[in-house]
Length: 206
Image 1: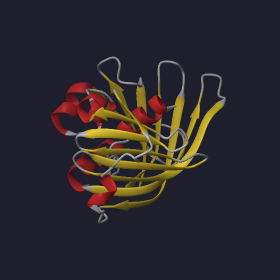
Image 2 (image 1 turned 90 degrees about the vertical axis):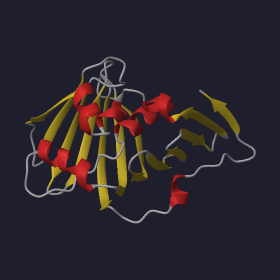
Image 3 (image 1 turned 45 degrees about the vertical axis):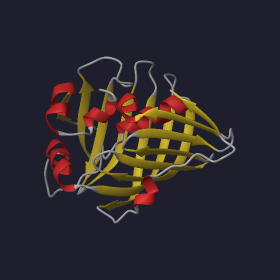
Image 4 (image 1 turned 90 degrees about the horizontal axis):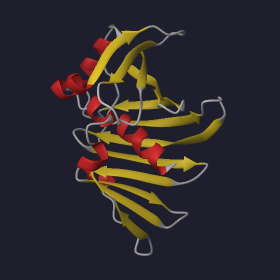
């Protein structure tokens, strides 16, 4: 579950759009120019190949370009993931355990590169508009390299914001995320992106 959450978090790294009327691809490109910070509530559901629900969680996330983020899971369990630009921390209060990785190892050339924008994004991912049922405008992103944690991702836009996202992996798992109460470019305290392990927690480095 920790691996799924960490990969998902990095895949969602700064993916919020702010544009006028445009295609999904144009909205995504303009996002990279217009968004510096973001905050939103999220509802994340994971289903397996057979369509059985394996995870259903909610929480709130904060993001700040170029490399800071925080995801607080509140239901049905509490968990915190913080990226401070140098390290990525995952804190599980129930286990009293902290897992920490260097930011470069956690991000690597995988999903987070998709959200970094610019030439690196274009080098590692094939991105195009795609059609799906419903009112959203969708973008499809397919990694050009292996071992990115997912085979394809769908990004659904409406008006001036990213509303939904889907990730599909090689095992047939589907991760669907719905965003609500999206705030674009809010003022976020620097303390949000700092994490100090509790004194009684076990710290594991990877």
